[in-house]
Image (cartoon, rainbow, N blue to C red; front, top):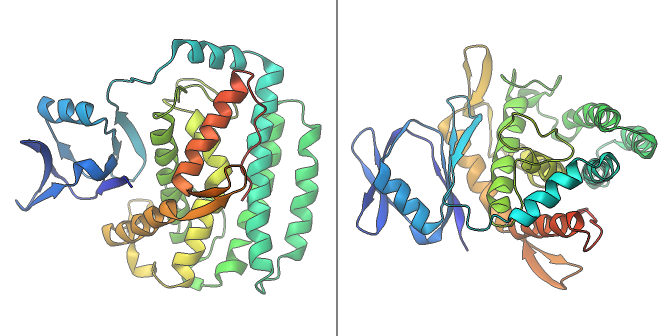
Length: 329
């Protein structure tokens, strides 16, 4: 099974014969397992040349770049061999139909809400007192059906998520990881830094899976298609954040795999250090490889492939082949 490869330090990416080598700043060279690599994420400064890009194209390996604050910067993607002019037109036509776009956007929001509620229900059954929060969130979710615009839907989703995040302290119960409030760019405490990093990893994972379908990642439906590089991956990530990011964060903290020592203050924000990021992505990759029984296929599939299946369903929905029913875990 292929996996994402992460480069946390700065260095040079070199092509040597029929493989890639990462040369760190101290001169140490690491041979990269190209045949087992799905994509590469570069967090440090990276020097490379045309030969490397040609090799990445040949091997169909996307290279994702992140800035010094771990925010996604962009992607080098090999020739878009799966691009379909027909499907791009279908995506655009679907986006320009207000009724169809709103319906799909609300499906993403509804699935996200359901999966957040399922996370809370899981911990409520394990002794965390979340009954009142779950009741309030269910009331908010019931209001989604009444919304007549995407802005209204996102407003309810925003209120829903704020209340959901307030449950994190009860689940984690660790003074080193108090939530307080959601902060981004920069995150102002350790828990927000974890959430932001985890969400970034998921956005990149979904983007990588989109590239393996006929869908165009630039055309989203819940998140407005504008001058933002990509938006469809943000839409689909909403469905999986509670399952793949939030539950992983709870597990890492409660098992003390991630601790206060894995964070540092930088300028105005708090960020994970390299050791923390390496711990997180190791467990995140393990989570993506975890298999579950798929009721429709009647066989086990990995969470990574589950994302791909979600994209196939969206593709069929846009072309009118089959109504999209989001994954609810």
